[in-house]
Amino acid sequence: AGIVKQVICEYQVDARRVYIAGLSAGGAMAAIMGQEYPELFAAVGIHSGLPVGVAHDVSSALMLMKTGQSALEPRAVTAAINQRMVPVIVMHGDADKTVNPANAARLVQNAVETCLLINPNAPLKTDTQQIVASDGHRAYRRTRYTTVNTVRVIEKWELHGAGHAW
Image 1 (cartoon, rainbow, N blue to C red):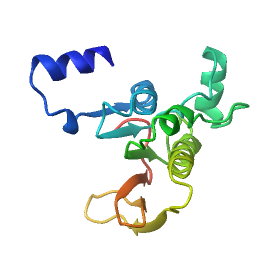
Image 2 (image 1 turned 45 degrees about the vertical axis):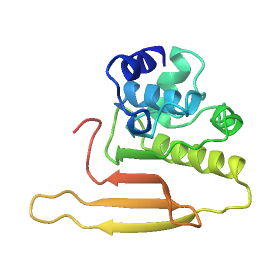
Image 3 (image 1 turned 30 degrees about the vertical axis):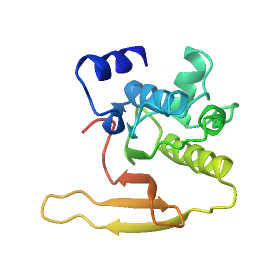
């Protein structure tokens, strides 16, 4: 967070247009940064990452990566306290053997719960689009979550046949 603030100041970056993204462990870190410092980021991108707060040591992280299961529930507390939901896009291949795709569902669940903690009277609308493979393009399913005033706050992309990295 300190580095981000320093770059914003030193390079006169538009603070409203700072994004964070990561793959795998970097995706987990992007999720943490977006949740812990929602005032710093316009949006978060997570590819094949882990939910925030569901692993407490290396062995529980490895178990979570392989099974998608944890005894701990994801944390939505910090973002809710800050009263700001950072829009998030979650991408995950359904053939990922390194990080179980169930983690993508938990990341989205955490984002939905954060939205509801911040604004319990504003349910999210969902729209799912299934795209079939064609002409060398991979099939995927995209689910978008929007607020009642049609602001897109969460997207989940399930890339059919994709492994851990592109």
